[in-house]
Image 1 (tube, helix red, strand yellow):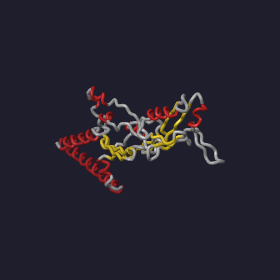
Image 2 (spheres, rainbow, N blue to C red; image 1 turned 90 degrees about the horizontal axis):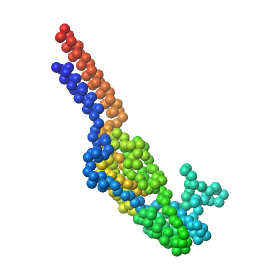
Image 3 (cartoon, rainbow, N blue to C red; image 1 turned 60 degrees about the horizontal axis):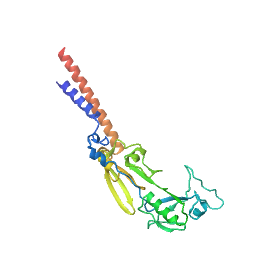
Image 4 (cartoon, rainbow, N blue to C red; image 1 turned 90 degrees about the vertical axis):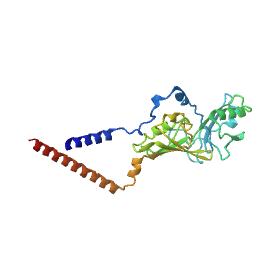
Length: 274
């Protein structure tokens, strides 16, 4: 009986250790969503220009002379005697317009132009309307040069990433970081955002499919994401390295004693049967 009891306990421990915790899987229950809930996930994302953004603005036209006053060089220059910086993947010194604390850029001929809070397309249409008073065939292109987002905490690769496109989701950022560690709390992910001076903190649950319908699913420039440690990691943090070594040794000793006791009981039962 004792041997059977120990065997049952051993199997329970084995199956319990192999079971996948429910708080590890992403988007739990997504297969059970109603059509209405799935429809709510199909949101459109429109990035907005923020204070401290650096904008690359090109103005072109078939009639180059008319847009010459608005045309900025594709790259900046060092001081006299130093070489210029061309556009490349590794080194670039692009000519950019900084969005100041009032939300304006200082653009040639036009002067101060309010752009903060507008989308890229809204800014393009506005500036084309203003510039076409001087150059009827002008075409404007606007890009955000410093679109950066960061992630840290319980992820495999904490970093600040420069994004070439302003359309990036929280899942894109998690993938860039190599996924969360096994110790990351997928239900306790915090988004920190500076929304034109207003500090915003939002808690996100990566196990909930409602994440796709969240207004914070898509990230803004300069967003920072922090992945909280789960309860197991918090408990582990209370122990020093020496404590962990002691616990490991104690576990080994207990396992050895258990194995010896099981062997003794097995031999004893065999002797009794004989």
